[in-house]
Image (tube, rainbow, N blue to C red; front, side, top):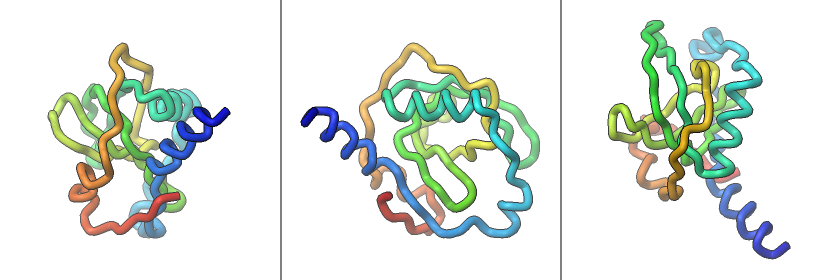
Length: 128
């Protein structure tokens, strides 16, 4: 339907492609579980808040409520770019470091890319 086509077009603008991941990043890449990937995709597509545990590069674990406004591919690594309720700030999370992801009750309205571009450390991206 025309409404579905508009919804898909809006969603496609929230997919970003960046440069190839560096060798130091790809060396630490793990396969994300199907459950985390499914929950992340559903939260992204339906503008739902995601409840997850995140493991940072040093192994510290934190529980987060996160709004996945954009998905970024730095081949072969997927990132979720969005709003972190714990820090009350924009954050980028590697999908393979997410654990125990489930949909939370909340919904969000997607924000524009410039609200997040400054956290990308000069990593240029283009729309998919």
